Length: 417
Picture 1 (cartoon, one colour):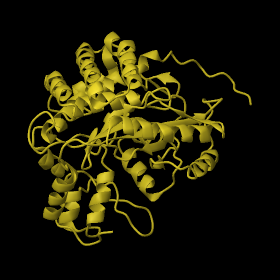
Picture 2: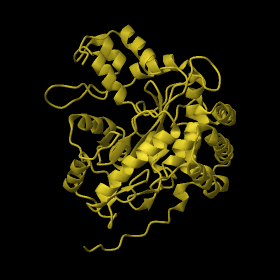
Picture 3: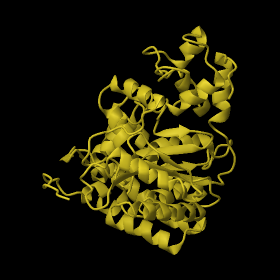
Picture 4: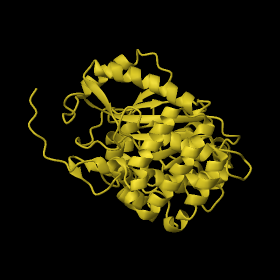
């Protein structure tokens, strides 16, 4: 742990160096969040002690992907960087099969939805970090608790790209991620229900993200060089908490990391504090050396997650598809306007309307076609190609998304066990 005091110049230099590590795209990864429900009675909330017992058993499994628990009891499986798309899918699929089998023995199941459709937010993890996060996010309303405790996603991780310009250059990939991201929100929207009521949003999860803290969940300005823009965004973001050996973690309201560096109060910040501060920022695209695309709802089915992973990988890592996708989504910048994602008109339309929005439908159709052409060049199996094609036929070309399969909720019947 680095506990030496940090200067503002050192912090700025560190952020520029560590968040965009450039080079040829060689690896891919995925982070899968899942809701966990009772296998036979999914409308019944699962007691936390039952979840804790099940998760203790999961720790005895031999998994290659790290398994963690989110604040509301959601499970997250994070792949290690894989040398190919198929290696990533094969490894994670094997780990998921083991996790599902162990949960099934205990009457539990993984559920691929972006937002819990029945249960209000209930925090399971009682840790200083999450106490501080909840207190911070509560200042702007209930969306923060829903994000922490009731949401799940598919997060695709791709290399930052080349230093040089071009289809695989990191500057273009950074911009494309924020424009294509809206298309991915619309195509894979899968959370139209909250607490047994249709919310009017195809992606309620994404609506929550746009309503939480007005800085920590936003993208930085895109009209500046990525390193400069991201470094300034991090330093000017509010500090969620100052960690302490004893007592609650808190911070003066509105204190930014830059102000903390300049004043040294309530204590001088360190490199470790900067690293921690980065984990409290949740933009739709988070640079962590690689790019982490965080905007996709969790998907239905055992292997539904492989479709957004395959499509995103193909559009970023195949040069021909990347060039085509960039030209396809670049005109969307005019609609996005000057507001940052996910609060701009483009992203709000994607979350609310999905592919019922004609412009997003047109862009998604073109991008899926390009991805399908690229997948054989990336070594995708015929089964994976068929899965992507089936998703495109069922949803994209028809202007639909998984949320459109959801029937109108009905009042739950009495459940007796």
